[in-house]
Image (cartoon, rainbow over all chains, first blue to last red; front, side, top):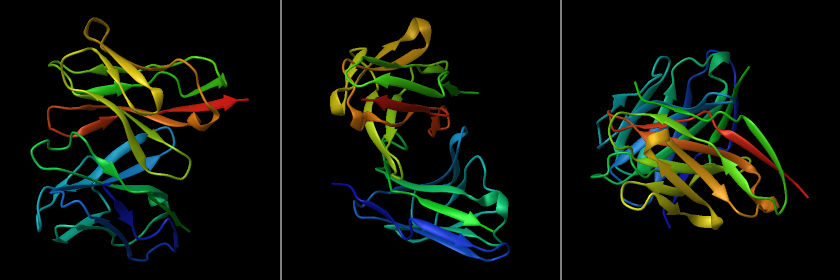
Length: 114
Length: 112
């Protein structure tokens, strides 16, 4: 079974803190994605990566950055957390060749910024 | 721009009743379409997908979906709903930038 794990299920941070969300997949997938989920808005793509050291902006990259130093790991960074970044964050991965067609999701991290 | 519309925000059905969740997409070419399910507090799980061929697609957990090009729709159906089907359901399409575009979701509530 494909397994995508995320470092925390729940996280509470203060405004201005630097926040790291970690995602690890064990299926040797080339593609990895970070989404933000808000009620009534569905999932919105923050950043994605098709290879190690490679990253591309999605639809809502402002206030976020990412790092992919190893194939299996994709980190989302909030340089200075703000209350409007309170949301569910979902990581996903997929095989190369079908660029983003069939994605496997982690359980999500519910981040609260106070 | 491509988009996905799920017109029903919240649906309530009785256990054992049939279910249809609506999905409409906007895309010029032949779309790649998906339905995902998200149980409470969980990530998304793929229910089924349509790439080409037979327009009636079977998925996991007894779900099926039918692609209708003339209506730009990809509705999800289940003949008899179980209490464990209570979840949020997302329709998605692969857009021309090769990224998944998700609808806003439909929350399904099942009454015993």
